[in-house]
Image 1 (cartoon, helix red, strand yellow):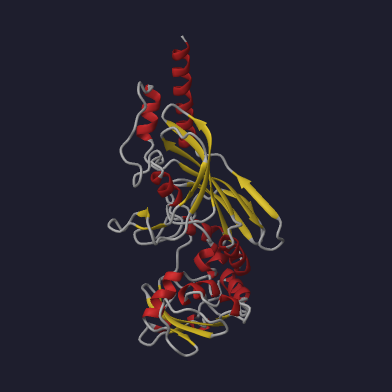
Image 2 (image 1 turned 135 degrees about the vertical axis):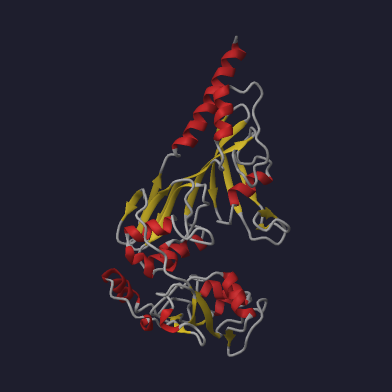
Length: 385
């Protein structure tokens, strides 16, 4: 796990508000000036047995101790401890807190809880968690299409084929590496300010926070489901009309790299409407209420209308009868899910102003749509003879 916060012990007051991010801007300025060279400046301390000063500036992982303190708001009574922790400290995932609870690194009123324990409200909570600290991500001069930029946010148009965040086997060449080159100060933020993601082969709009306050306000918008994301998708089959898919999504019970609609999964809601119908395909616009992994891809496959080109959920290639050669070529050449994040609307994290952006699909998806329209036109003319 990468180091997410530096130079600050994160605390929360009884209302659940963040109240101790006092060192962040100083650290951001130090990073921009290139003066942050001493790992000892971090208030995430070296864990016993760690490599000490080699942590974030060495060539391999070391260990640091993260210290979080807060109080559960009283109106959270009845909520599971792991879920309440993820709400109290949203910069860390619920899965992370579950792991820290299992390893005894979380205490509620001085007692190590179980994940399923319920919050009473008003309890003091403390987390002292050992974090593996990896070598810093490298800034790289990579293409970056910026749609909007100010002091608080960046909005980028991600091309297909680009991984958003470094991971196993993708340490470089990611959107994050490009963002760090554009703004080195993002290195001081959790995940370099990335508050939501797109799959590698999904194109379109993605917002990046440029301050810690913006990070938390945008994350809060996502939690409150007021972060509007609309996608264009080409699906197999002719849909008769729009609708809503409300089906929980979880890890596939056997194929662990896949997601699936399954009982006990996380709530997931997708609204879709038909934009164009072709002979054997449909162009739809999908609006997300939630943002689960592979959500649109899983939900459309669940409806038996998988996305064109989807290598995981799409099944075998389907050509319409008497398919025009140009369309057959376009469908065979389209080797990724036909999904594009076309529209994004947020409330500006500082001013609260409603902002929306919209971008057209990349050329290969536009070419696919053109081939589908041409095929429809040709067959309509033949049918009218």
